[in-house]
Image (tube, rainbow, N blue to C red; front, top):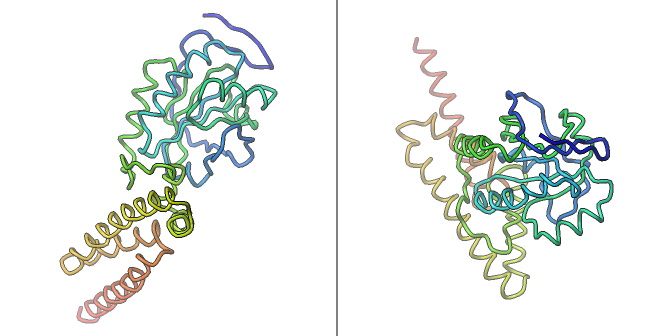
Length: 275
């Protein structure tokens, strides 16, 4: 095993050691990004994410880049976010490196996260759950890295748009899978479908149709069991509202949810009085 020291970090030639899970949360709010369309904290809360600390001067880091690029391509569309945080001093050098190597995942500058996570050598990768728990940590060259990533992805709920080609709107994938930014992303698609150029209109309209179809399927599934299992239907309505509320398609669900909630409350009161 060989070590090179630069900028206070060791460049580690060898295999990292995985650590047990913890509940630390990655805060990317102050990251200075070298790539466009960076993820948000809300995106991380909806996805399994890989955060790797690296440097342009680190040979083992550079060696792992094709590997991580390949994984980013393999997991595209499956609600997995890959982030590389450089411990370099110059963001200009990092931007040049990103462009030269055609890196296809998010790259930013380390904002002190390496200190909070106890990183003293690079490359060092963390696989983190949607809930912010560290599931695996170590050198991404470790054979266990891919196994741990596959396990984390399989354990997470399937993304609504898994496997769907979003074309030029792929940067909206995470937001369109549900959550607090869903309505905003949906509105952006509606705007592009109406006011974009020809290519944007076609692509945005196609994506909207796919999203609407999947949402209608979710709504229909709730309707189907409403009489047989109203409590389960109520929960399904709530999930739709929580994840996909704020658009016309789901507005009517809010009134259905309220009516069903009152109905169940009335039934419970009636049974209690009868007893």
